Length: 318
Image (tube, rainbow, N blue to C red; front, side, top):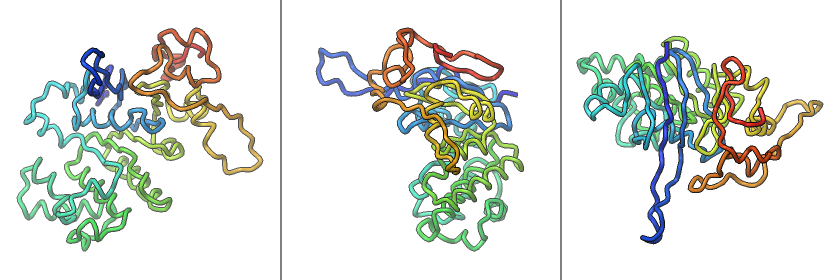
């Protein structure tokens, strides 16, 4: 069953024009992204910094409003909901942010932060809410004694577990994970990833997992979508994409991952220069100004098309 359908999603941020005679410009952070998520699966979203991954995440949970396109969650277009209807829906989709410190309220205890969504989205009495908070803390591996502490009294890993606890408090059906381990060291990162995998298996939640860590994406995701300059350039099952990447950008990303075996030699595909500005994106394939395989046809418009079962690529050369 399709739980989430994203259709031609756009988010453009207007810039102040330097002069009245010039056409107003805008940053095309997200420019025509489409994908679907089935109930219980995890979609990994990867790409360079600034490609629009986090903007997609914020559009999905309506912390920012899209410029265009549709986000259909469980058959309902979220853009059509007023503030009250959207508030009622929020118990079904939540987000874990990248910064485990900045996303917590320093004036609230752990008890207060995890209890807040229960107070807003359920009708549980006070005593039952507080008991429920202790159960949730146990689910994410936190001691009940931590409920009385404030964020500054917690370690980085504990703060991120509080973020996860707050997000799953209302038992959402869909969870957006925006680089939830990037601010943690390696050991804490592994613990949080194992926690997320365990919660997915136990609660049957659907994840959109955004990360730079390709090995973690491979471990946690059923399917992977690769973004470049505001668009998706390749999407496939995790096994297929990592075994047979087709788009030059995907191949460049994967070839840059270190291999922990000095005897293994892997062909590198190196991109030229820096990504173009999202204010003035190249015509045709957006990678063509950096791609070492570019041909004249790459200046023509290119669409994301299925080249094998479940494998979509936006490249003229595939």
